[in-house]
Length: 146
Length: 146
DNA sequence: TTGGATTAGTTGTTTAACTAACTATATGTC
DNA sequence: GACATATAGTTAGTTAAACAACTAATCCAA
Image (cartoon, rainbow over all chains, first blue to last red):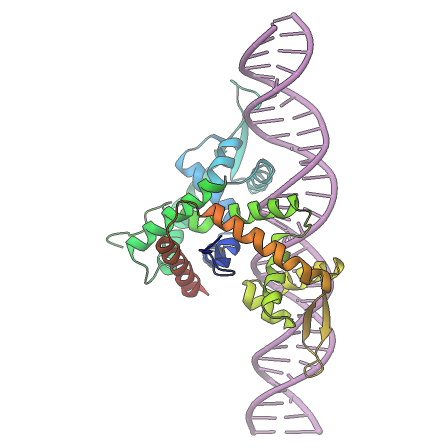
């Protein structure tokens, strides 16, 4: 490395993910203040089911960047909360399809509004162009390593 | 919000931190392959002690964006590994100063090299300018919310 | 058709994060 | 000096992440 582009510590935030942690924490707090008792991780699963209900656990792994045991346990906890249910697929009996309950469907609009508000708060003073650059960089970082 | 700058889901990766998670996971794997048996979280504490030895636990909270219980337990585990030791401050007996052991000091160069390599891998195809933008955005996001 | 490889999901174990409630020391004000 | 307040750190409890090892169903190829 003749000219080390990435000096020590400079990119520490890439490794720690401090910014995304801060957003997640704030969103969690906003949920709590509105009496919504789910974790951000649980919300992130519901989020993808709101886009498309009946995904398999493997689909949820891909969508949320989590491994299979993590999804197994998140679905366990969402089932305990009666927000989703596992339905074994008839076509392929290895597969569980995950379906939203009616209460989960009702959570959608409020939590989406809170998520948008939180992102707007987080991105005060950031231009649309900067956001695009940032998203693109994060995507390439992810692709480089996955 | 007449023109919602941040459409639903567009910035989802900011919340999930998929990119930083991927970097952390890769770095962890690289550590393992070199027989270095510490977690990324433990490394992130050592990292700040390498910059300045003898920080208090509160200093480490601020530096690593973690809360106090998290640091208590990370220091517990680092003590078990004989990588650091707690030394109660004489001036203020509420404070523990955390000092690196000799083996911890020896981990420094190798792990730093691996971290730099990992970041270089992660940032293939990303220009220096894009990195600067990204860092700056992540910093502002963090500052907006902290 | 059978036997190996792949895929979907679960379980066990360790480490870590967050909240809340706690102890102990220090500070500052009347 | 005494009391309220703030600061540093710990403990307890729940949830989640990463890894390894596992079961069960499916696919595929000889």
